[in-house]
Image 1 (tube, one colour):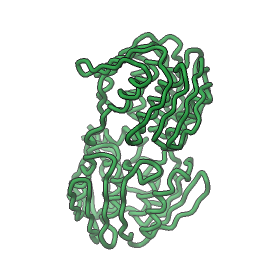
Image 2 (cartoon, rainbow, N blue to C red):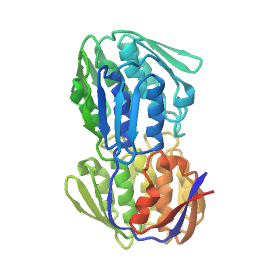
Image 3 (cartoon, helix red, strand yellow):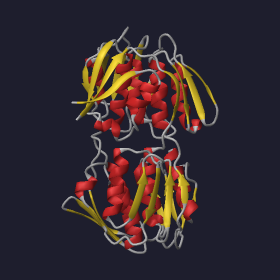
Image 4 (cartoon, one colour):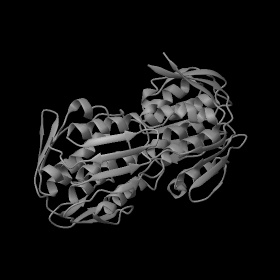
Length: 420
């Protein structure tokens, strides 16, 4: 098992290009199962562990997939899918695998999907998916750890989410594409990745309106055609580099990203004393000598992303003053607090809230990555810490970041991957 060895403190400087968005690429790849004829080309696909997992899933159900990791180009030919089951062996590796439910149900009229795995972030129910497909006319049952759904064609209708669901919205888009009538999704997730998925489907011939707003309408399409599509840049990875610059008094430019998707994040970094500039596709951050304390409340887009909460907490540990953090998206997402304390942070957590008293400096220690985003935040804290740190379980980080240690090293960090 690999680990990162980090020697701090670092001062990040330079330019780094952002990889394609994992959270857009995964549903887009799953959505390619809806295309009955021809070979689709998907570009800017990041070479991550989760990408290889979804490839295995598509191949299991009968799709032909090629992937050039160097060029970041994938092809998918789903002309002859025949298997309607997504097994536990693959599903347990990541939650996004559940996104094959909609395409398989739409194409084959049935789907048998194991309940998903992935990062442990508290309760992440698939009830929204099950209820929504039932409202579209599918018969959905739970059997021995599997969701079993049958129904073809699905019926259009109005689906209301009690709370915006990222994967729930995407899965419903897949299920509604070939439905008999129009489908209206009320209180849909508004994330940029939802827009990316809708743009991909529309390019293939779908009729989706309103993506990026809480109200999406899907008009029925008869068939989708093969498409050549480029995945957008990863706003979460871009923000991670920005937080790294902020915490190390650095000066970093991130390119290949729609900066409009980072508005609330850049506002919070500005509150902490950072200077930001840029254009629509690149952003530059200069960190202050000492960060200022700030308060964060995670909330579905366009609110502050829960996936960046760990980076926000890491920055707060070395700020001047006391910061408050409230997690409203997941019930158990403060696992990184204990690891940050090992580095000398002063953090008190109660339920979904954390109080962070900034300290003068952190000190290197042995820590571990509990999940993808927590791991990234912990790495940033190690960059800012005095002395040597070892970050264990970096396989979690590899699920969401393409060669994070190499990208940080290119910016001046003393970080290396070591077999442990």
